[in-house]
Each structure stands twice: as C-alpha cells, then as structure tokens.
Amino acid sequence: MRRNPTKILSLQSTVLVFLLCALSLVNAKPAVDLRILIDVSGSMKKNDPNNLRVPALRLLIQLLPPTAKAGIWTFDGKTTVHSNWGRTSRQWKDAALKSTHLIHSSGKLTNIENALDTVTKKWPIKGLDNNRHIILLSDGMVDVSKNSVDNSKSRNRILSGFIAKMQSANIKVHTIALSNNADIKLMQTVSLETNGTHIRIADTKSLHKVFLKLFESSTKLDKIPITNNQITVDKNISDMTILLFKTDSKQVRSIVSPAGVTLNFPSADKNVRWHQDKNYDLITITKPEPGLWKLNTQVDPDNRVIVVTDLKLQVSPLPDNILAGESVAIHARLISKKEKNLSKKLLQLTRFFVAFAKLGKQTIPRHENGDAIIKQLPIPGKPGTYTFQVSAKSASFERIQHHEITVHKKPLTVNVAKDPDKQQTTVEVTPTHGLFKTETLGVIMKFADGISRNFTIDPSRNHRLKVPKQYNGGEIEIELTGLRTNGSQYKYVLASQLPKYLPKALPEAVSKNTKHKEIITDAQPVTAPKKKRAKQPRHPRKAQVKSADTNWTLVIIIVFLINLIGASAFTYFFFLRNRNNNE
Image (cartoon, one colour):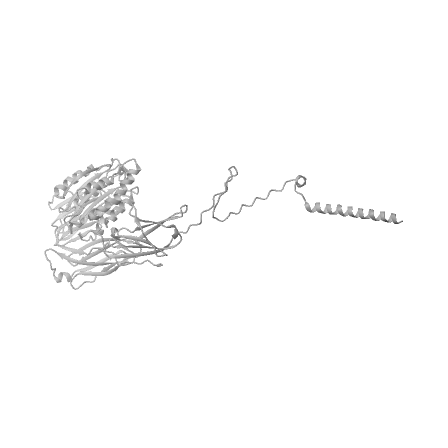
C-alpha cells in the first residue's frame, strides 16, 4: 500500500471573473455578455441596511465599456427586469443609473432557481464564445415556499441540472454572499463548478474595495501607479479613469492637470465625466494631458488609475488557485496596435518587475525578443490568498497589473461518517474547487485485496461511497484522477485506515417484573453479577437464634459420643453379668 500522496504537473489559470472582473475581460473579448442578479428580499433590510448595493451597481454600470452587452434583474419570489438586456451604450448606462433607486429590500421569498433560469432562458447552450457571465448577489437561502421539501428540491435542481447546463455552455457564474446566513455551500459550489468565483462579505461597508481586489485578480486592464497622490500620464494614454475612495461623503476633492488647471465636481469640461457617490468618486478623462497630475484627496492605498492605452502590458494567464508547493510561470510583454513591432530602443529602456507577497520586488529576466519570462516563480507554501503585481517601467511610462492567487493545502477533503449501530462506514470526498475541470474528475477506493469501487456523485456535488462491511478496519487507498484547469493530467493517492467496530453488546438483563424469555445468541456467555454482601445485624446473638442453618460437624460429634458412651455401658454391663455367673 502506498503511504505518500502523489502529485503531477502544475495548475494554469481558469479565468475567474466576479462583478467588475467580468467586465474587464471585454478588452480581450469585446462580445462579453454579462447578466446581473440582485437580491431584493426582505432580509436585505438587516444585511444591507444602507443599501450599498446601489453605489456598487452604479460603479459597475459606469465601468461597462460600450462594446459589452448586459442586463440587470432583481429577484425575490419572482424575477423582475431592472435594465433590459442590450448593448451598453451611453443611453443604456444613463437609463440604468436612473433606475438604481428602485432597488429595495421588501420582497418575499428568495427564488434563486427562478432567477438563474430567467436570465439563461434565451441563452444558446452552445455559444460561439465563452465570454459569458452571470453575477448573483444574495444574502439568503433557497426559499421558494413554506414547504421545506420544495426548497430542498429547488436547491438540488440548481446543483445538478443548472450547473451541468452552465458547464456545457461555458457560462461562468460569480456569486457574492452578503450574510453568514446565506447558503454559502450552494453559492460557492455553483461558482467554482462553473469556473467562476465566490466571495462572502460580513460587512457591506467594505463592498467596493472587495470588488476592486477581485477585479484586479483577473483583469487585463492597464493601470498606472499613484505615488504620493501624483500620477504620470504618458502620450500613449487616450483615456484614464480615476477611482478615489472616501470615508466622508462630504469630503471635497480636486485634481490638477500638468498645466495647473484645477478640476473638481461638477466639471464643466466636456472631456471630463465626474461621478460622485457616497463611497467614491469616479473621474473619467478623455485625452488627458501628458505630464504630472496631482490628486487633492485623502491618501488611500486602494485608489486606482485605470487607463485606455495603445501601449499595453500583456501578461500570460495566471492561475487563481494553486496547490502548496507548486510554482507559476510569468510571461510579460509590451504590445501596441499602432506599432506592431516596438522599437528596440523602447524595449531596451523598459524593465519588468514582479512583486509577490513577502518575497519583495524582483526583476523579470528579459528574453532576446524583448519579452520578460519567469518559468518558475515559487509560491509560498502556507495556505491563503496572496496578491502580487507585474509591472513594466521606463523613464517615460509605467504599466501595472495586479493578480491574486489562492494557495490550497491539499486537492481534496475526506470526511468519514461512522454508524456503529449498523456497523457501516460512509466515505465522502470533496475535491478542492478551482483546481480541476470538475466534469473530468473520478474517485475510486482500492482495498487491500485488490478490489476497487467507484464513488458516486451526490446532489451536493460530493463523491460518496458506502464501504462494504467486510472491509471495516482495513487499509484503503483513495485515488483521485482528472484534468487540471490547464488541461494537464493529474493524479492524487491518499492511503488511510478504515474504522473498526466492536462486537455488538448483549441486551440488558430482563426486568424482574417481566416474564422470563430464553435468549439464544452466539456470543460468549455473560457472567452473572456478584450479589452484594448482606449487612451484619446489629444484635448478633438474636441473629444466631433465628438462624436456620445446621452445623453438621457438631451433630456428628455428638452422635459419635452418644454411641461411644452407649457401647461402653453395654460392654461393662455384659462383663459384670459374666463374672457373677462364674462365682
């Protein structure tokens, strides 16, 4: 039997997009199709008392590029169109922004199944592209009626039929739970089984910054750094969007151009669109003046400047999930539509860097063609989520991209359920989501006698097997095989020991008040319990008188003495009579 786990090959990224992340993929695939579902059930009064779904949705709407297609729905017991599905033109955005005040928290029930079915009903199962996404934001459980059986059936239909449908159509479902009372297991499974991502937020006050971090974990949008509240704009930037978070809604901020012109809200400049919300300001500037810009605002490490530029930093797809001990490869390069072959002088003056966790900033070695390549970048072995930054920098420009990687300790979790009464063991295997193409996974159990058995998949998408009783207490191997998200073959073997059960105990003694019944069993006889020693009476003499026990030793001695005396008397009498006769 093998004792050590076996791991094969490495993990490439599955493009995980969540809310804003999904939108960023539009740059690579302009035909993105995004459908957004917002929970408006009554429980939102408690879990989102300040209705922070509204500013988050406004931020989302404004960042949608005009080449995208999108639609917004709200749901409780039924699903209602909030913004019609269509191309996200300026007219569509204006209408969507105006209608955000209609988002409420007064609905009854939480019919997640109906919401998912509504937004996918007219979606072709076989699409020409895989750049299609669903965003589901909810705080509750599946609640379609007062009957718990109906709720359970609806939940199982989501886990089985809906997931299979989304997988075959290459539709990614991204979920966010706004409460610990939400069905975390359901939402997480739906997301990760469809190569989406899931996040849980306990405090909705941090909603915007959480969205930003998720956005940066998979976005391919270029950004420029903010240093001491200053940014350097180069001539290759055609548009820039400045996102400034704020803790005080009354806080006044402004920006100063290289020419010394101060811009603030509201702006009369036709090239400036300034949106001000409770938690952030979003300023979009068309054809920004090259040079040094100053931001008169509170310093916040989460402030960002996103740019539309012809000179882009292109980074190879990176994994979102990886196993401890594995490494990743980074391939970075500069690209330009206007200048297909960038000048050697520009490339020679550009340096590439990667800053990852606590490893510090490292230079990425340059290839002879100008690309920057690291074949194996070691990842910290401690499980957790790590953020790193890839950047390209020269004297005249700088581009950065952020990404997050979650490190997992092992590829699967094993749960052993024991039933001593039935002497039955059930083994449940849960593969780690995000590491595999789930439809390719297979799990088998190998016993010491060479027999193998396949696990079956239950409605919760776990692999389950009832172990035959003859193998109780024996050694087993659990073998997981399948494809990683990059298509490479993977195999993992885990050796373990099954639990051993003690023989069943005999029934307890029959009560004295019940009739005696003979019990036949093949178990060993049970020794009767010893009687407790009776307490000594307080008056021992009286006890002796009352005792009915006979001392047979004393009786025998007395009888023997009586007989001895009698025999002696008879002998003496006989002797005297004979002597008298002789005389």
